[in-house]
Image (cartoon, rainbow, N blue to C red; front, top):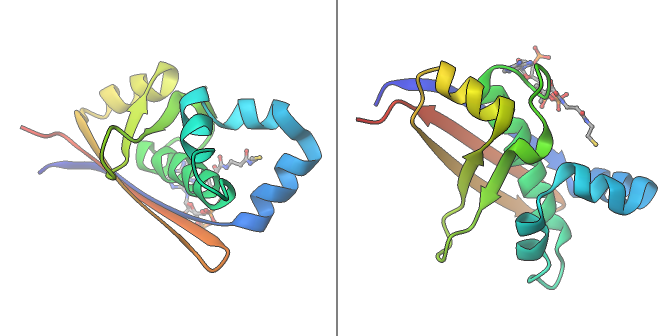
Length: 128
Ligand SMILES: CC(C)(COP(=O)(O)OP(=O)(O)OC[C@H]1O[C@@H](n2cnc3c(N)ncnc32)[C@H](O)[C@@H]1OP(=O)(O)O)[C@@H](O)C(=O)NCCC(=O)NCCS
C-alpha cells in the first residue's frame, strides 16, 4: 500500500454551529453538497454529522497537501455514505486533479463524533 498522503482534523461542533448560524444557508451550500446535507438531515441532530464531514474535508485537504487552497474547495471533497455505514470520499475539480497528480487511486476515511467534538482521519494511497 504506497501511501500518498495522510490527514487528520478535529472540530468543535459548536464552532460549526456558530458559523452556520452567522452565515446561514449560503454557508451550508458553500461547505456541503446536497447529498451530505440530505444524509446528515436523516439524523435527529444533524450537527455532529455535519461537523464530522467538515473535519473530513479538512483532513482530506491535508492528505492532498494543499489545505483549502490551490483551488481546492469544500464541495470538491464529498463524503459519501453508500448503503452501509462506511463513509467514502469523492474528489472532483482541483481536489481530484491534485489526488491524481499525487498518484493516488484510493482513499480511506474514518469519522467520529462525541462530547461536542468531531474528528476525521484520511489516508490516500496508490492501490494495486
Ligand atoms: C490545512 C488547513 C485545512 C488547516 O486547518 P486548521 O484547522 O487551521 O489547522 P489544524 O490545527 O487543523 O492543522 C494545523 C496543522 O496542519 C498542518 N498543515 C498545514 N498546512 C497543511 C497542508 N497544506 N497540508 C497538510 N498539512 C498541513 C500543519 O502541520 C499544521 O500544524 P502546525 O500549525 O503546528 O504546523 C488550512 O489550510 C485550511 O485551509 N483551513 C480552512 C480554513 C477555512 O477556510 N475556514 C473557514 C470555514 S467556515
